[in-house]
Image (cartoon, rainbow over all chains, first blue to last red; front, side):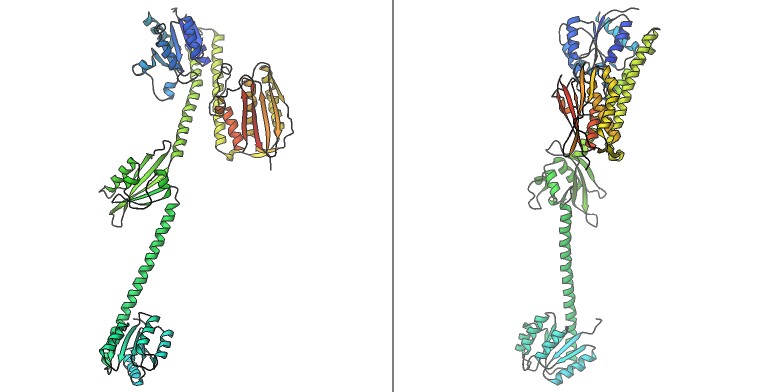
Length: 132
Length: 492
């Protein structure tokens, strides 16, 4: 099964960028990468991806939040689904959930790092379908 | 009475003197005689009498004068007046002047014995009263001493002490309590606690103790805060009871636990920081293993190997991080672990430079040792020194630029040897400078993003320098380079 779609990965950890790029490309997606919120926004504007996979903890600890807020309040980009991937949830002792935090976090789904390839692919596929 | 009462008879008539001796001697008293006032007075000065019989009419010193003089010596001596002229007036006059009673001449032996017996009893009562009085005075003195001792002890305590009575009045406190609780109007005791105490929570707890009917009620311990948002106090409040267990008031002991709280916060921040720093590489390792295991490589052995190598790299960095944490722990455990010996820094740094030469060449960085002065040997822990300069030299190479250089220079003044590690690297932004020695702090720029590090190297360097009573300084300009200067005390 070959999927299609342009996915933007925003993460400051080069390992996760490469890892997720490899998995997603393997399954037929086009992958763009950015290592900071700023670079991510530039790529969103320039490339109009179909999906964004975002790391919550970037250079500043709230960079993920402000990135998603900027995207989700822009009428041009608000339809782009955002999959938030994070390692803070368990480290800080609480879990994010769509029901409780979805409104103000303005993302479409959450996953804890590390994300196993099957899970990543399944979520990506689901988010892209919903969009269609 | 163990010893017989001592009696003196002062009379100019020998018949009376001898008569008294005979009668009173039979009663078992210790009798002395005096034929006139002068002799009598001398006897009184020599011996402590319990009772003196004085003839009013004598040549020389008269009886009334004698009474006065004797009482100047001992006011508690019982004086009995013997008078031939049994005039009521003189007898009354004598009692006015302090005589106990009078005996008109002629008198019967029985009358004498009875009167003396009564006088001696009176004397014993007086002495007993005097003893009780003295004892009480002494007790009061001791009590006053005890109280002032107690005040001194409470006064110099670092913990605050505050005592309130059942009427909710402040009765005792010390300077520490005034300072910590910011007590007002404590110039005199007896003010209501609501008036002096600002802290609602404390007043409520004290009221609970003062209002408690429960005799087993023993103690309240609570954290309280004052107007100063930074300060945290721990108050222990307990009822004060008398020997029958009746409530008299409440005592509060206050300890300033601000520092403890701060340490607690710093500790928990450090733990959460460490947890996060450990989790990141672990998540990456698990991620790579997951990619390999889920068969993403689809039989591409070369690809699989590449991913596993990435996992291995992160495992290595995790190991380095754990190593650094152990290092910090070792330094913080203190000097116990330090072995101070004579160290030739120039030689040691020379070896470190040799060790890093290949690495520097790979990065196209020129690594040079240019000691401007020869350094004397210093007292230091060799392992600590190796770790310190390894960290600094390694940083200088890591955060350098293509075709840059790292130069190590030396300096010397009266108290310190100086080692200066100068690089032409990426530099540190002024805003980041104050934080570079913080745990896990890593200055992030586009150029440093690809450089791996634990964020603990400079923390360790600073801790090592501090533990050797030296100091570390940094000068830096972004894109121009940094100079780290280490100053260590010269051997005395």
